[in-house]
Amino acid sequence: MKKTMIKIFVVITCFVLLLSIGYGQSYTADYRQANAITTDSLKRKLKLANHEDTVRLHILMRLVSRYRTVGSADSAIYYAQQAFTLATKINSPEGQINALGFLSFALASIGDLPKSLESALEALQIATDNHKEKEASAAVTSIGHTYLQLEDYPKAMFYYRLQKSIGGPGGVFAKTHIGSVYLKMNNLDSASYYLNQSLNDFQKRHVENWHVYSLLGDLETNRGNKELALGHYRMSLLVSLRQNLSASIARSHIRLANFYKAIEQPDSSIFYARKGLVESESLSLKQGQLEAAVLLAALYEPIDAKEALYYFKMAAGIKESLLGAGNIKTLRNMISENEVRQQKIEATKVEYQNRIRTNTLLGSTVTLAFIITFLFRNNRVKQRAKAKIEGAFNQLQSTQSQLIQSEKMASLGELTAGIAHEIQNPLNFVNNFSEVNEELLSEMKDELDKGNIEDAKAIAT
Image 1 (cartoon, rainbow, N blue to C red):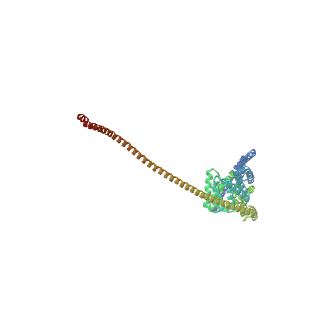
Image 2: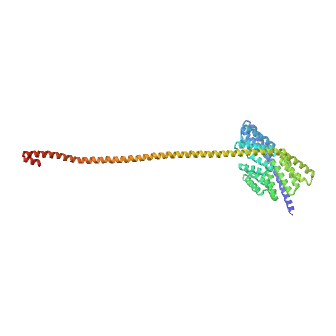
Image 3: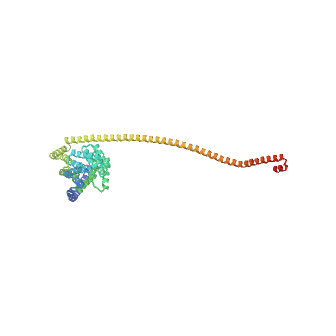
């Protein structure tokens, strides 16, 4: 009964999906036409801006973004290389970093992982040298993708978290990528948290992202929620069709093929795997070709050994071109060199920080010594000034006391002189009267001697 219900559900879903694809193809035709007009318009603008290097660089980057979005890797690589050359000519680190970041993505999409990693590392180096780390979001993301393909999940997580810390529009995609790493590590709760956060962020911006829907489909497949998984895969395909994302359409078909294989619907799985393979081949998407070929080899193994062998050989050849001994060795060497360079950078940073700390400590010590010396000298000056002030004050007090004493003595002298004057007047009178009396007594004595009693009495009176 359960299997019957699943089959009915799958049939209905496939019918709805086919209708949606029909609508999506109609929509895509219009979108492609509009996109072609926009691309042609950009090319015309590029021709007209012959001597305006800054304008040309801006147009070239728009063309790179346009071709990368629609999955035309060769054109994206061509214009990214032109953009990098022009950015170098006009000495624009931002242009160099962005061009190399997009070039790294385009190279990875065609399976040239060594050159992809080389471009990303060069972009990161230019960003570090020019203190423009925020411009390196694309390069950091591309390095994370490389580590994810090498199944080095801790390193991939490091670069995706670095992408998230850089901020900007890349922060939303970083949550998607972090969720994809947790999904690979089978940490479903953390994967669900980041993927749903990413979906909410995109919805707030009124943006549809096919990748987050496809990853949510993988999440629900791992949880056993087949209906939810199919709904997410369907949305992933619809978004890819609406936006004419050729590479994403190929990947969405491959994910649907994996889904139908998981629910034991080999015919549907083969149908979508073949579509994904053809689309990946037309776009030179090595990773898509590899996934589709591996899937088809497994699907044909129990029913057609010849077809299974054909796809197995195809997968082996693609895998060798992607992750063959030469490429792996090159990648490992590049990664090792980058890690050594990063260690040197970190060591330089630590040395620089230690130097700053030492210089800061030395500067603080010198400043403190200067302050102490200044305060000591200032204190001595104050002490001397205080002593001078106290001496002057004591002298002033002494002078004041002397002045007061002088004033007292002067006042006393004036008082004494006044008193003496007051005494002298009566004394003079007394002296004068005494002298007159002496004369009168002498005259009275003479008159007595003469016998003139009357005259003597008169004098006596």
